Length: 488
Image (cartoon, rainbow, N blue to C red; front, top):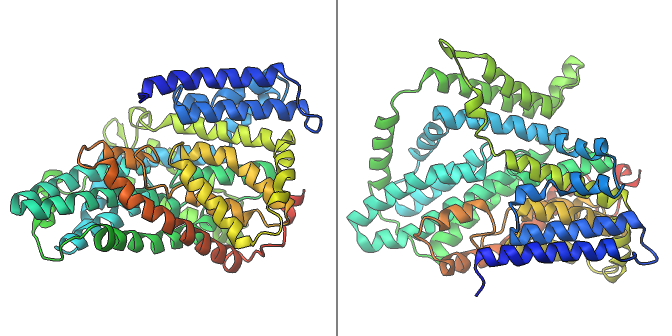
């Protein structure tokens, strides 16, 4: 059995050998040199992402090094991918979230939502899921999971002390519910998870199609709202059996934690106002632009919200956010997203995506819904073994090319596939929330697979079906009508 270090070493070697093969051999007769090298870079990055030969964020820097070296892009052109407007939108969202975490606002929000939960174990799980998903819409799913874990552990401890058997039966579904709802919450908003930003960046950069914060909310939020109660039902009624009897475990935990954090501080109030103000601007941006005849965008709103936190004082010599707080944001994710945008840009401009699309005749004639199911299934199970952001960066340009080649509106393939990347529930390595919960030592891989496999299968059908209906009837696109922005 290979350990993680061995896999990394073998992955490092295999990736380099694969890339050397591409640079030392001629491309096929129907493929140009730039596309051939792009394919080599894609395989190198995929191998290193999957095996974690080097940190996945550093792998995202490969395009900015290799593409200028082989004259695929000028350095100025490829570096734009790392400063893409949607990468900067993510930066603004990260800074606001970091300020929320620093002042403790996110914990107060969590406790207030949890206090509305019932007292039975099944209702407590529902409360944790709603709370975690709500926070994950705005804060990274990793941070929301880490924040909710100690609260859950306190509740579990009280349950075990009250009833050892019931406490054990309650522990696993509660922890899994936190991990899964963190991922589902990220689906709801454009800044909820890097995969959403990745898709929006690819569409904006390569096809000049801009998905606004509100546009994504119209698709992401309904999917989150539908999947959350379904996941709760599967965890508490199907896979595990959770008691419906009342308990004061959650009430005692919340009371204790509220006493610890005390009354809202001035910093919490300021950060809360800025957060609420920024969210309202994101949601109402189109209306504001039309009414006032101006042209603000989601990126400028996010950065403006972050800037306000650095300006507004909360005490003498102290602002709502300082650099030591902002410096704690996950900078590596920005490199990962930038590298994915650069790779997808090369896929399109080099002709590699079109060349891969020529193989789509194998799929021509298949039922459209079946095709959507195939691609969504592929993405979900690939994400079980690979970074979801890396999976979307690699496969989205290919899926778009396939769709165009068989006369399908790519939105019907790309959007559900992107959402599917947040629905990998089966393995600890699939998503950061899964890894955090598994790291608690209270859950075995067997338990995670037991629940996750069922939810993966359900997710395939629901994500496909709901996305299809929302794109068709809410966004107003037809599956065989290719929008003009894909044809330019």
